[in-house]
Length: 141
Image 1 (cartoon, rainbow, N blue to C red):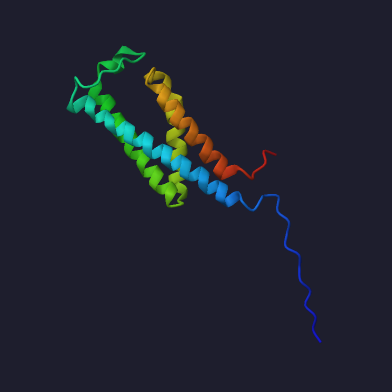
Image 2: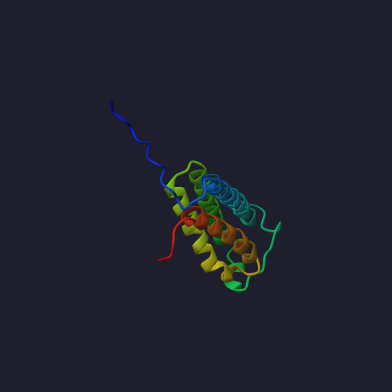
């Protein structure tokens, strides 16, 4: 007669709800990226209707170049929307693009003060959610 012994399941240090928590963080980051992308896409109004909205920046050179600012806003907006789509599709490239865009935004936001404060809020939330979702179970050492 052959006896089969059941092996106990390995004990993991991660709670069973971690995948759901990761999904929630990724959805939050994708939603923030999407909303931030749509807001930045609205910067096209600087070119289409120049008198509609006027923003003063910390550096006067930025205020004198509305077309360049609109172009940068549209490109960053499209990249944020693309990243949100990649994150919602559970693709690593979406996570990486969102992380890189958020880090670049946090590095450059002082150039765009006072409008950069909105960038800081959105990019900070996105970066924190993406990093916690990806590395929540990892140890430093």
